[in-house]
Length: 225
Image 1 (tube, helix red, strand yellow):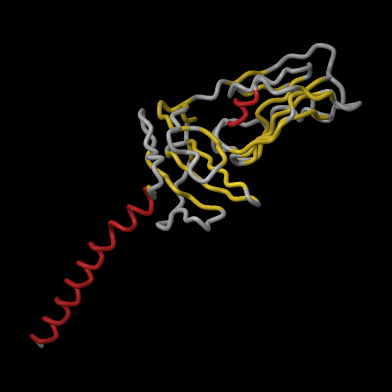
Image 2 (cartoon, helix red, strand yellow):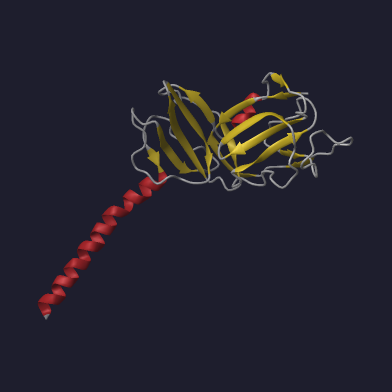
């Protein structure tokens, strides 16, 4: 039994491993599995397939199984859900294996999608992919581990409320988040571009104006009395 084995972070990052070399599975590891935890993915050999109860059903599923199958190199790594019904608790494949495939719908919106290492490695990136249903934003995130700076771009279900963006000393931050549409919206030019922060900041002058008007009204009322 051989399975592709890897771990990655980023929207649909597993698609970059279709040509990954396979690893020979240990005894009693009779399945290949691809798991998803938030935006991280882990593929490799598994002792069991846990049926369809924990399969990824939509974009909001955060801890689930994308694929589980019972033949060598059976992971498709193409975004479809692949499972083996009614095999929970088994440690070896049944004689007649059937698979269930569920197409993951996209919403017609697209984002630049990539993972790269380096301070400004995201500049000039053009790779884009369609977003799954429920993913209505595009984001660019930075994570620093040791001396390695990793930037990940892709679709997101939320926009984090922050106006600060990333700095040269930030270790885990959001640089861009914008409304996904049929055309990509990430600038990838080094500037902070965060929808929720911009919306929040744009309401400040209006709130100040309303507060001032209210104070003038109270002052005038007091003078009349």
